[in-house]
Image 1 (cartoon, rainbow, N blue to C red):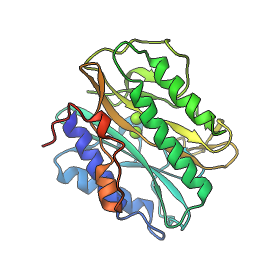
Image 2 (image 1 turned 90 degrees about the horizontal axis):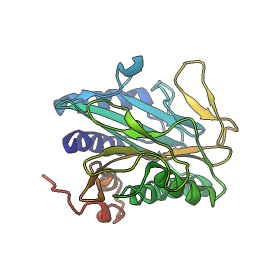
Image 3 (image 1 turned 60 degrees about the horizontal axis):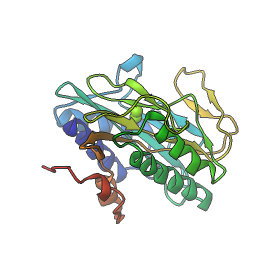
Image 4 (image 1 turned 90 degrees about the vertical axis):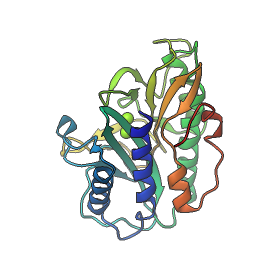
Length: 260
Ligand code: MG
Ligand code: MG
């Protein structure tokens, strides 16, 4: 699973350099598909529930599940890129919301808070805690900024299939739900809206957007519970390397990580 997570992490790192104004998301999709196949893995989303592409690309008010197209990205957009890969029979599933050119302070804040909430959620994935502890942590933090937590879409267990039990909502009550045990691997993925938590479905059957058309952000990591502590399988290191960002946010969750 570490290998699968590594491939999706590298794929997003490769895309980080390509995401800029004027670029079409279908181009990003083609790059990602070739990159994953070059690493002797399969795109995880392509054909899954009949999804037509390798990436889910969701700009601005789109929450998740946007379909790549030939509309150029614009300066000031934010773009959620969600990527899956299948290697050795196991899935990786990883997402990051990128800034396209110069974005507003309001969008920057939404990205910062949503990414922070991902790590706050990861901290709650420890031995003795339950599913509701993650949701409660993410919800409490993000709602304190007046943001909306999407209810209809959730994180999930991850393994030989892309979506396994338990569901990991980004809202919830402390101490409720399934108890975490060593060896579990889950995808934690806050989807946080600047305004209302409510969403709408596009007629394409896939794309989901905010009901008030305000922006939405999405970050996703794959995390294993090892010796009672959350350990990252995926990493944003390749993205940060590409963008020249210095960050120590992942260090607490890499204690048991043996990097090849
Ligand atoms: Mg995903
Ligand atoms: Mg996922």
